[in-house]
Image (cartoon, rainbow, N blue to C red; front, top):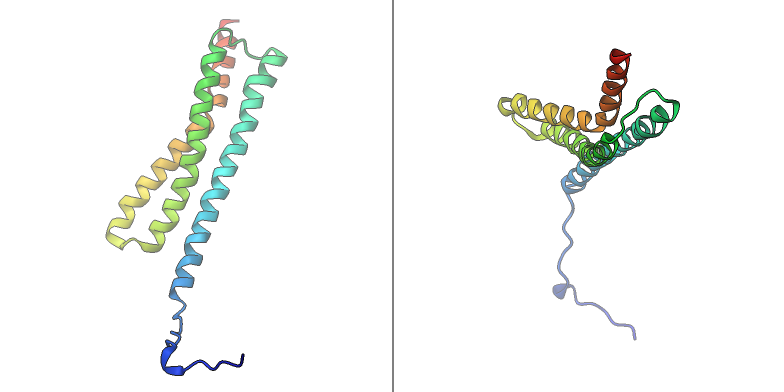
Amino acid sequence: MNRQTRPELVAPRRKSSGRSIQRMHAFSSFDELGRRDFLTGLILWVVLMLVSFVLLPGIGAIQPGDRMGTWFSLSLLFGIGGSFLLGASSRFMAITNERASSGSKSLLSIFGQFAGWIGLAGVLFPFIMATGEFFAKLSTN
């Protein structure tokens, strides 16, 4: 039962430099940043959906009529897509700032910021439509 391992058959253990662990930790923090921004955009979108499609029509501030179904379906598409784009762009910006060379960093950062603004516009879409309907109602009265 008492077996001895022969040292010549056992491969020596390599010492870790720690770089792979640091690299893995950096990517997990970037993933956490993207996840947090995605959830923030999604929660903001849900609140704006409730205000735009429940509260404002409920108090009579807007009368969307037949357009309500179209706005709701577009808001679903733009809101979820915008939240995803918002999270992905913040993760992209963090990785770009960490890894890109200084020559291409400015172009990539402009691209990431543009994607973030498009994502934010998708999240804010229901509020933009409700605000437009509210001002259209005010101008007709």
